[in-house]
Image (cartoon, rainbow, N blue to C red):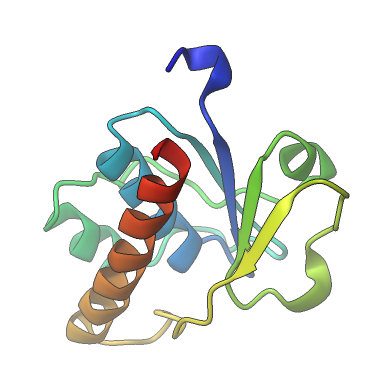
Length: 135
C-alpha cells in the first residue's frame, strides 16, 4: 500500500491526554506506520497523563514528546475513520466518514494498574481496527 492510499484514523477524547493518545500510539505500533493516525481533544489538557506515558513505555510506545491537541474540522475531514472516546457530541459529523464510539474508562486519576488495563483494552480494539483497515 502506498503512503498516498494509507487509511487515515482520528481518535478523539475530551482532554487528548489519555485514551486517544494511547490509541494513536498503538495504531502506529500495530500498523507499522501503514495507517496514518491523529488524536485530538474537544478540551485539550496541558499535558499527557504521566501514568499513560509510563504504561505506554512498557509496550514500546514513547509518548513523552506528545502534547494534547485541539480537535479541528480539518482533522475530521482528512480522516477515513473517526473514533470518539467519551467526548459526546463535540466531534463534528461529516457525510461519508466511518464513526465509532469506544466506551472506555478515563485514565485520569487512575492507578498505573488501572491505566494498564485501559491500555490493554484499547490495544485489543486497535488490533482489530488495524486488521480491518489493512485487510
